[in-house]
Image 1: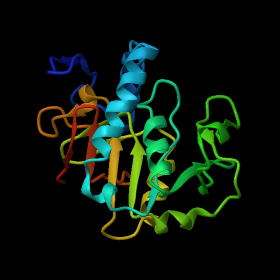
Image 2: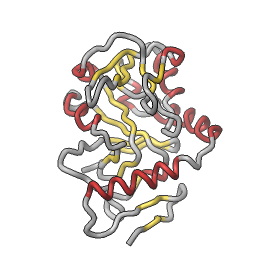
Image 3: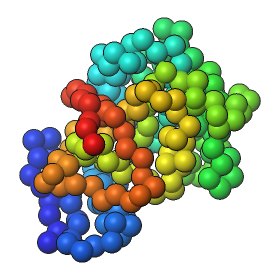
Image 4: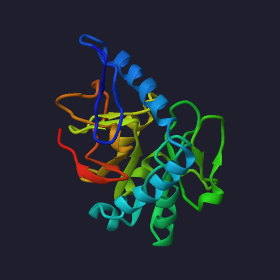
Amino acid sequence: MHRDSSHAFGHQPYPVTPGMEPSDAKEELRRAIRTHRLTRTPRQRSQAAAAFADVLETIPALRDARCVATYASRAAEPSTDVFLERLAERGSRVLLPVLGTGLARDWAEFAGISDLRERAPGRPPEPSGPALGAAAVAEADVVVVPALAVDTHGRRLGQGGGWYDRVLPLVRDGVTVIAMVFPEEVYDGEALPLPSEPHDRPVGAVATPEGWRTLTA
C-alpha cells in the first residue's frame, strides 16, 4: 500500500509497497520528496537556511572542527549558504565537492559565496580553486552531506548518483557524518524504513531547522 504519513512537521510521502525492489522504491521516494520540496517558497527556504546554521552550530563535532567537508546547495535543497558563511567567518577550512566527469570525486576549498559557480546545468555550485583530490575529505573533522531523506537508523536517501557512497569510505574513522534534511524528511526507521542496498553508506546524525539527533544502525 502506498502511504502518506501524517507527520508533526507536515506531509511525509512513503510510496513504498511490500515486495518492491529497493532501487524502485528509492526512485518512487525521490520523485515524491522532490515534488514536495518544490512547495517551499524562496522565503521559506531562506528562513530555513538561517535555522539550519543555528542548529549546526550547536553540534559539538562541528563546534570543534578545524576542517569541514560540506556541500553547496542547489535551489530546492536545504540551503547551506548561511552555514558556509559562518564557517568562513570563524576561520574554518571548508571543503566542497567538485564533481568532475562521471562519478569522479574531488574537492576544492570554499572561498566565499560569490566564488561559487554552476559549472553545468543541474549541478551544484562549485568553488573555482584548484582540485585537491578525492582523498582530501580525509582531512575533514566532520562531514555534512545532502540527502533527500534519512531514517532513524541512519539510512540515507541520496539523489541517486552514488557520489557520496563512493566518498564516505574515504572519511576518517570516527568522524561524524551529518545529513541535512527538512523536518518531514526524517523517517521512523521501524515504521517507515527507507529502502537500502548493500552499497549504501549510513550517516551518524541528522540536522533539520528544528534540531539535530544522532542516529543508530
